[in-house]
Length: 221
Image (cartoon, rainbow, N blue to C red):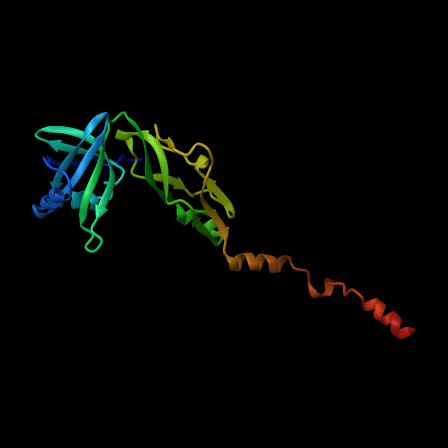
């Protein structure tokens, strides 16, 4: 399973903070942001808007490690949050958290399903019901996987897959340790279930009519 590709952004330090400074940064074609954590004071930064949009479009920006380049020096960080304009969806502000590649962090990673075409339960007419499209994992900041693969090649009808059933990549574990949540189920469709019930129903000739003999007895009397 591939790791997330490392994104690099060129940043500049903003001397001032606040709404006025952020607006000035956007007018200049930049996106304001802040980098915090790592036992160091927060720093107000800005980065070219086109670089931020490219990073967002890569699908590997939120919750992943990036490299922030400033005056030839690079700082590893995790993209923690992005604020977007409510009308045009332009990025308005980005929060970064300082990390080292070896730091153990918790991030949400999307789930990817393999071999749906040969899944026994689905081939029998079952439906794939996904409960979790992403899973919170614990892993080194430098080894965040692109996705968590779940193989459906042997999943049967009415089978449930829990987080404990997933084979995680090396050095990656579930961040949820106090319970074992359901990730997906393969269940019969309503039509299939009703058909099974009809198959199990008794034939008309096998049904005993309660009270029929009692009525006959009254007539003979």
